[in-house]
Image: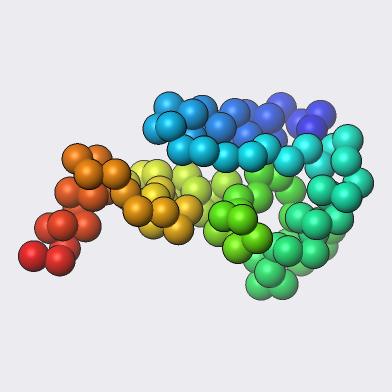
Length: 104
C-alpha cells in the first residue's frame, strides 16, 4: 500500500509473527486483484467500514477471519495473540501461563 500508516501496521504484524516463529502467508492485495477480491468478500459484514473497503492488514487463519490491526494490537497488549489467531499458545509463553492460571 502507498500509505505509510498501513505499511507500519503491516510490518508490525509481520514482525510479531516472524519473531514468534508463527507461520504465515502474506497476500498482496495491491498487485493482485484476486487476493483483493477474496479479502473483501471474506471480511464479515459487521467488520467492514461504513463506507469503502476494509483496509489492510486483515488477519485470517486459513479462510477464517480473525480481525484487523486494531484487534491484533489489543490481543498483543493482553498477551492473547495466539487465541486471537486461533492457535494454541506454546508452552512457557506468557499467554500459555496466563491460560493455565485462568484454568486453575
